[in-house]
Length: 116
Image 1 (cartoon, rainbow, N blue to C red):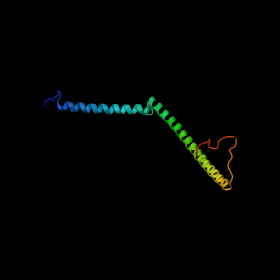
Image 2 (cartoon, rainbow, N blue to C red; image 1 turned 90 degrees about the vertical axis):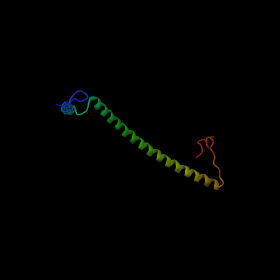
Image 3 (spheres, helix red, strand yellow; image 1 turned 60 degrees about the vertical axis):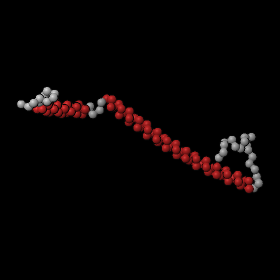
Image 4 (cartoon, rainbow, N blue to C red; image 1 turned 90 degrees about the horizontal axis):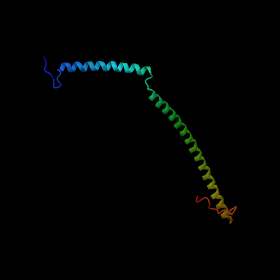
């Protein structure tokens, strides 16, 4: 007979217990797999989280689309403003070259919009 180990069980007993535990673990995993397959592998909490995540992804996609559209509109507006500014500068230079002057309409000072 073998000598007991420090825990009081012979090695053969420990090995036997480990083997039995592994067999129980296999059975427990098989039962777990069977139960999760029956529920679609998602708990109700996971299903709610997945639904919320899908909803948030749709919202994010829509917000990205809106942001892209607004950026395009902003770029177009900036292009038009730059073209008008360029034309305005050219017209003022042409007027100055002819000896004319710019007259403010409506009594408003000419630099109310700030420097450009």
